[in-house]
Image (cartoon, rainbow, N blue to C red; front, side):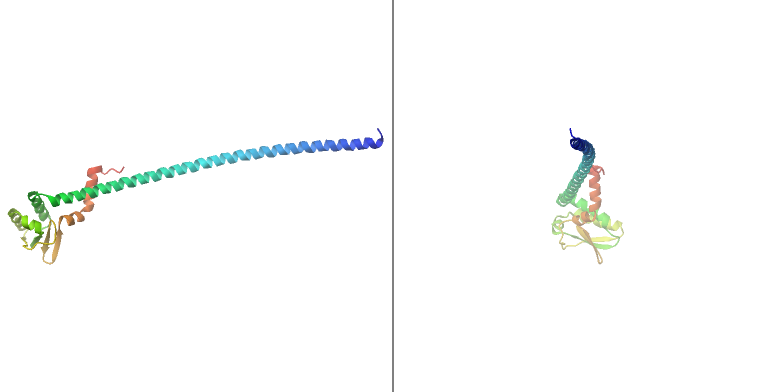
Length: 201
């Protein structure tokens, strides 16, 4: 082998050696990059999974809360419906009582609202026609015990039940509807206690 060939071969050998080194270095760097990328991907997958689980838990909690609020609202609406229905039935029962019990209720109502002065009671046409004589006597005695007096007007008022009390310029509406409306909150509380013993579901 001539001197030129030796030099050429040496250059080729050195080039091959450097090329091998570069390839080895590149492969190492590639492996490091891939390893780092895989670690980052694993971390991102874990974080993404944890985030997804948290979002799912929050969504589930919100859904459960919404369902519970909806259930409570439905229960409350049903309670209110039942209470309103019972109050309506109470009014209908009072209004539709037979003559005897009906006027007994009227006597008790008058005891509560009569004044110690001269007054006038106005009845509706239905009650004026069917009023027992004992009712007139009873309310006159009640008024006298309170230091007042009462007379029943012969002219019917435009009411369906109960009565109006007139003392001078003051008129008190003692119809069953007015009494129930004035005491509706109390009636609701009483009905609520009877039905649910003041327990909130």
